[in-house]
Amino acid sequence: MMPAENHSVFDPVTYILTGIPGTVESHVWIAIPFCLMYITTLCGNSLLLFIILTEQSLHEPMYLFVSMLAAADLLLSTTTVPKMLAVFWFRAGEITFAGCLTQMFFIHASFIAESTILLAMAFDRYVAICDPLRYTTRLTKPVIGKIGLAVVTRSFCIIFPLIFLVKQLKFCRTNLLPHTNCEHMVIVRLACDDITVNIWYGLAMAILVIGLDAVLISLSYGLILRAVFRLPSKDARLKALHTCSSHFCVILMFYMPAFFSSFAHQFGHIIPDYILILLANLYVLIPPMLNPIVYGVTTKEILKCMINRFYRSCSRSPLLS
Image (cartoon, rainbow, N blue to C red; front, side, top):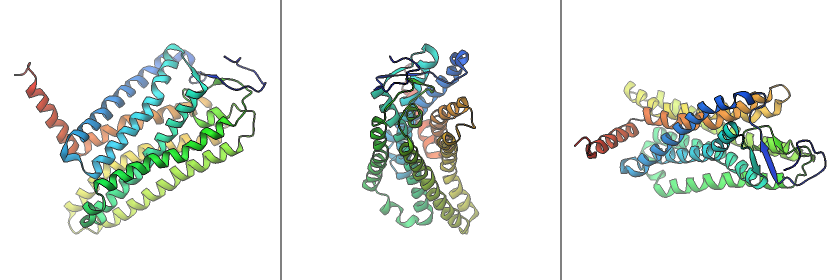
């Protein structure tokens, strides 16, 4: 383990995650709601995946995209929250450099995957509402499989260069990471090399993912709303708007904290560190927790399948027979 203040160049072997600066005395209490949110995330997304994959009636494009989103949520939260809780409760913040890079990769890769899935879901709603006659011919299961492969490929190709950019840096300041997880900018700020390339690549990545995807999603929903308000029947308009409402809520929950978390690092000298870290923690906790609740409650088909599955399991229970 390297000393906390060593300004000679060294190859980092072990980092120490210190949690949220200035709140060490409250770490035990902060971790309790974080743990409850993580348990809710695990249960909600696992149940959503199970229902969608086992119910044949839900093997449609919209629900398959929801299952992809649930898988990405599980990856994002499981990559970060257990280590975060270990830091808060047991002060077990030690993590190897390779482990830190691995966590960094999966944090950012799952973020890009979620953004890409939300873009695919916007396209799905666009085709379903604006071109319904071609919906079943355009979004077939092979096409959904190719979109899923594109989600993984895009995430990998965008994030993998970050590994090389970080590994080329020389570190000389400290091995203490004032954070709960290994985000890209948190690691590179410990380097004694010029990190301009890292900063610009991270900014370009944020613009490409948050900016471009958000613009395309907004464009899709603009076309959807135009088509909806041209429908002759009021009931048809309400049904179309209800179909898109859950997806729109998920988009807002994802992009709003992601926007502030990604761009707040550019104004780190203005915003206190503990607020930046709290924003980053809420980003990996709140959207994955709320997504299955939104889809499970507002989507009638999923809710119906959950209720039917519950009644079937109760009827088979020997306690109720």
